Image (cartoon, rainbow, N blue to C red):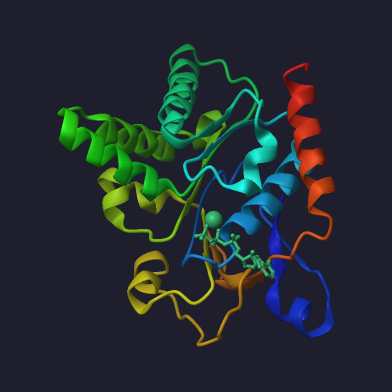
Length: 246
Ligand SMILES: Nc1ncnc2c1ncn2[C@@H]1O[C@H](COP(=O)(O)OP(=O)(O)OP(=O)(O)O)[C@@H](O)[C@H]1O
Ligand SMILES: [Mg+2]
């Protein structure tokens, strides 16, 4: 699928040269960047591209912030907001576990979590108050899918403002095959997500940044502003509804 466009030809000449990465080899992705760096817009673009490419992929979308950008999915079976994201992640984990146990792989699936750390923080606060362990359950489930999902076609896209390793149990962060850092990351964040990479000093606007994919050189990426966003959204919804037969 198309993971964005090479920034320079796009910015300089309006040339859209796609960065193509097959989902089978690149099922897990981390999209990070400060507030306003264009993460959610990029996600909307990527979701549309994903469904164009693999119309029968089963999509679980957890939007803790309940942002306007995804409200068009209201009514779709696997769309979760606010505290219901817990249910979304656990249902996904259950499908993943069932598939692992009975060995028969059905449709490719993907779990998309926008603002994942905000959700985990929320759970941690609740856990403190109520002496529960929901945050740990979520962290461990996500870590397990990151480590074992690839072979059975279960992917995860995580969108975060910060990508601290504490969010990913047992070094699970190393399992992201694609990392997109949008906007101008702090030195600390750069070191964390792109460790060992030469990062150019380019200043990025919203929707631009660096993309690192397994076994490829780091690239400068640009996401387009979606021209007709309502059409884009209804196209996404139509594909998802067709799958569930409704
Ligand atoms: N690809 C793009 N090209 C040009 N401008 C963009 C692009 N993506 C986002 N923007 C601009 O940046 C604004 C913020 O984008 P977006 O909501 O996607 O950021 P975000 O990283 O998700 O922020 P937050 O962390 O607050 O959710 C958009 O409203 C738009 O004006
Ligand atoms: Mg956002």
